Image (tube, rainbow over all chains, first blue to last red; front, side):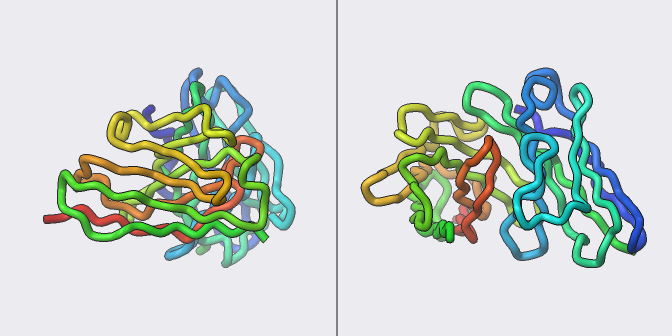
Length: 110
Length: 117
């Protein structure tokens, strides 16, 4: 149950796009289409942004999109806005009723 | 509206025990798989445990297996986490989450556990 690997930080100017990678193994990310992404602002509980690799819950802007290739999933935030500045975590089912989170990425809007 | 309210956290000595609770409302608790997630101060999210809607299946992170026990009372709409043999590294905010489409779609505000002598 090793944490999925994410870059510690990512940044972009308002209006630009930023993509965050999430690398796992053939036992978690590569094995299931059950990757989800969470946004967490300081002092708040996380919020679900993407589920099942690329689906957005109602209320999440379509600026947020997800994809997966092999053992790596990605979250792209297009048209960056100031309120997108937050920590982002990926999460994957890993079989046998277990899950694993990513290490987290701090997104800065320049 | 889905509501998850955790309680039971606090300051405990190493080797001690705590039982965390999560009161659920606004959805059919008895039909929902539930999870516990923790986050040490300034650190990332760590999945802790999962329990099936009827309580018949559970899963644990390797770091807590044998010390933590997840359970539920569907008549009381409440999820529990029994934490034994507490260690300093168990100090964290503990979140209760509802699982939907194999994702944590709802989160409580958390309950803080501090392990210190």
